[in-house]
Length: 251
Image (cartoon, rainbow, N blue to C red):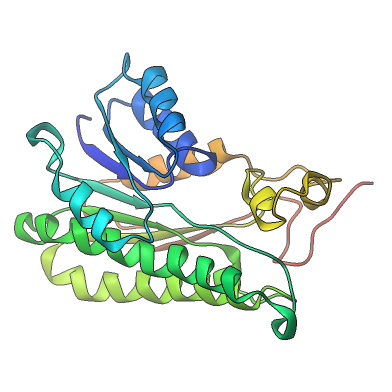
């Protein structure tokens, strides 16, 4: 394959699983994340399979995003695929008691961070008139659920940005699509509930959720279609999940 993919949020969950699969499939990788130690460990695991370059930054930091992506060495400077995976959820509170800090974190990472990274990568794709952007959204960007308020809003924004990108970049032949998972068992719930592992575990109790590897496999399928094929918007749920709030559990 020998294409270069830049993956944000590569140190855990869907991003890490995608990096591992792409390494097996001979993609060159630019792996981005906040946790340098995890990036180092992942590179050590993968560099025997493919070429890996690390970028340590927080997508919320606009200056760091542009500086780090602008510093890529020649062997990694041509980005064929951008996977906007970095995202988070903080809290599960009704609107009247929600935390302003939580709201800021979700909007800054899920929306503004995605925009910053895309803005940093797009000029080269526009110049070449080729490239592929995959935005990782959520079922929460298709359906609002109780106490989801601002998190859902951030993912609805990703849905709108995905559509806007696809329209604006059509003239350059750049493919744009979104993968929107339902319940995936990652660190997502541990972060949302701020380290309350017992509460996080309850989210996935009584059914088999999606695994990060399931989404990685789908992302790989999407980016390996013939170039005239663009998978624009895909919702993926575990079989037990019928909607954002309806899950068949066997307790």
